[in-house]
Image (cartoon, rainbow, N blue to C red):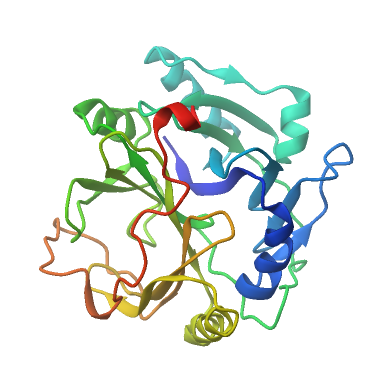
Length: 304
């Protein structure tokens, strides 16, 4: 499939009011207009797209959907046919759903774990329109999507690899340097970064573990680090530099209970001509000072 990356994420949350300040004042995101019939929802921008994150009210914090971006109509139609030929139940978007997602077309289907996927093309946007919520150098979304997300799966069988690689057309990045079974994948057309999505195995558990936002430069990471510490926001992992990709970053917990990794690339990603098997997660830093799984990781019965 000709997929560039993740175009948007949708969440349910009882903590939307906290995101209204946390998004702009901590992360540097901008508040976008919500649909007229969603006065309690929150849409957040990180670039010139209409939005990148949508929060609807819900009883618990959870990831509601992952929106994968096809490059154009032809690629979208071929991808939908591939899904249907593979026997995957595909729900075609209505006019209302297309309007809410601000896209030309969209379909919905689920991965083998049960996470709600969406596939779309033609998301609305306005050039040179993004104004960050605070002083900020902007986010690096060009050619790769919003960043990355890591989710937890209660079981990790071969059907997940088959779905992601053979049907979705993702590239396999590797298992990472962490303990336990984890897999990282990137969209077929994303050659600018190591992964768009990761699946971590935790028996009997499910949910979003963290999302990663790529900022414009090191200053953006440093200023966000200062804001997080001054506000007493819980940190998951301290400042550090990964061994397997050029990420200088830290992790802290959002108002929803999942972690957010704030990243600056120290140099262009060199690609992966062979699968790495790193001795350790990071060259330096990234001390784990909080739980590795936040409160959004629950039993499947709570989330599905």
